Length: 118
Ligand code: 5GP
Ligand code: ZN
Image (cartoon, rainbow, N blue to C red; front, side, top):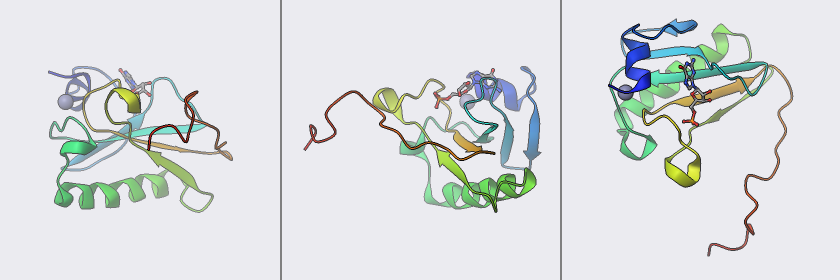
């Protein structure tokens, strides 16, 4: 069973912010912003590459509820999902980082030449 499935099953403790039938939101153990929450589906999905449109629609509503719950919806926030090796995905269970609570910087994301791929 993957790490986040264990968190869903409460085998690993987490600091839960919001939970419903389909999703769970909890604080990231290693926050990269004053507010850093992870939102995950309760069914195991490897990554954004595998998520259905139907689940993604519900997930979007849940993410917005989380932002309202921690009162960053008006001040603004960032939603990120890392996909695969180049995306920097470390946990192979779909998750959305919800970051806020301060003005977030928008820097470069890699040392590679940004014009190099195409
Ligand atoms: P990724 O790099 O896969 O996009 O993000 C994984 C995130 O999960 C990281 O930000 C990391 O800090 C967080 N994380 C890893 N293990 C745990 C854990 O056991 N509990 C919590 N709350 N967060 C975790
Ligand atoms: Zn899982």
